[in-house]
Length: 205
Image (cartoon, rainbow, N blue to C red; front, top):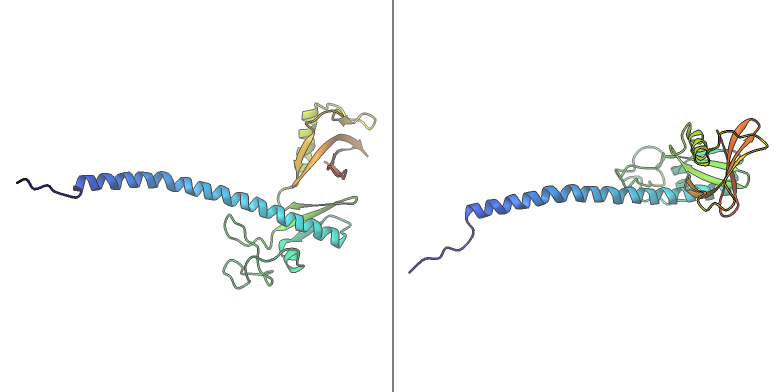
C-alpha cells in the first residue's frame, strides 16, 4: 500500500515566503505614500481651521495694522482648543500652558507657528507663516501681467480683465478672489482683487 505524504515541501514553503516578501515590499511603500498624502490633507484642513480662527481673532481685536500672532495666542484666547495637554511628550517647551495643536505630518507642535493678520480697509485676512514670503507679491503681479499680456500700465490706462471674462479667479491666501486688474497708483503697480462679498484687497509690489 502506497503511503501518501501530507503537508508542504521545503521548496514550496520557500516559494510562499518569497511571494509574501515581494507582496510586502510592494505594499509597504504604497501604504506609507497613502498615509503621507492623508496627513498632508489633514494638515491643510487644520491650517484652514486655524486661519479662520485667526481672522475672527483679528476682527475681534480690531487690529489697525498688519500684525503677527502665534497659534498659541489663539489657544490662550480660547479661539482654538488644544488637542493634547502640556504634559504630553509632543507638547513640551514654551507657550504650551493650555495645550498644543499638532501637525499631523510629524506630530510636532504648531503652537509657535506664526500667522500674519493683514488688514485692508474693513477686511481681515490671515496668512500662514511662509506662504507669503518676500517677493511673492511681485511674482503674483507679474503672473497676472503675463496672463493679461500687459506691456505698459499708466494711471489713465490700467490693465484690466474684460468684464465678461469668466476665468478671472485666483486662489490666494486661503481665499478665492476675482481679479479686477493692475493699476498704477503713486508710481506703483497695484493688483486689485475682490471676494464675492465685494471686499477689495490691494497688493502692491
